[in-house]
Length: 335
Ligand code: AHM
Ligand code: MG
Image (cartoon, rainbow, N blue to C red):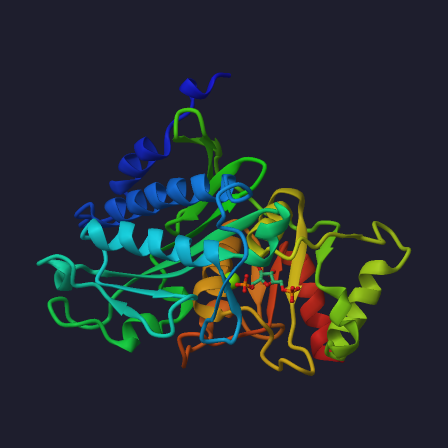
């Protein structure tokens, strides 16, 4: 089948606009802004090896991590695309210490939506030409439109998300998102610059045979996680499972959703709350996982029900095929 016979992302967004009661088209415009920014970032990621944008900028973000040049670039690209198009009133990003209030246009304060974003996740993989991704999460503001955005607009539980998704800059570039009505994936035809619906209604299989975890941290894991890893490795029935870990959440999640598997970034003795950030990494992935029939918890509690207290809050993360996550939780409970 030629790509011309697939629906484009643009067509899909417009079609789905009718799903939203009282829709004003604002969310559609917001998704279109993300679509555009992702193409610009894709172009940069593709030429990273020759464009003098590999490597470190030399400064650190709020979490004390060194920022890569492409992190900074991707952050600027998304912020610019979202703020120029009059579609959001605020943005919180992994790369910015504080949230950004958008006041570039006269109607900015009237916009309903805020976006939380990790513009380039897994960026330590860039220099070695391994897949990276963008993760985004969209909420309706809780404060009154027409007033400046406040921290509470961003500190919302994942269950309040209006939409969430990711872009994977992989062997092909894809955008995968949900507005609470299933998960759909679109592949970019780079020659035309058009995303086509290539993966309609994506689903996690109920169980799988892949486990993804950084086993280098094994000695620092909680006993429940150690026990679960041993379970995965045991010769029995459909086990041992296969271990696959790219170190790029988006790519690991994407593979596991297609093939069936579990991704774990648990607490460790050095990082008691794990590594991944609740608001712009875990919640959007949890929304996608649940919409695709999977499960996502911190080992005990549903990720999307955690009450956030800080913008850059971290949580342990267990995500993937429903039965596998449930099994891992069982080990956590019994440890
Ligand atoms: P980042 O946002 O600084 O890129 O960190 C998040 C990434 C995830 O994509 C990935 O799954 C994890 O960190 C890998 O961490 P580790 O190297 O500790 O296994
Ligand atoms: Mg990240």
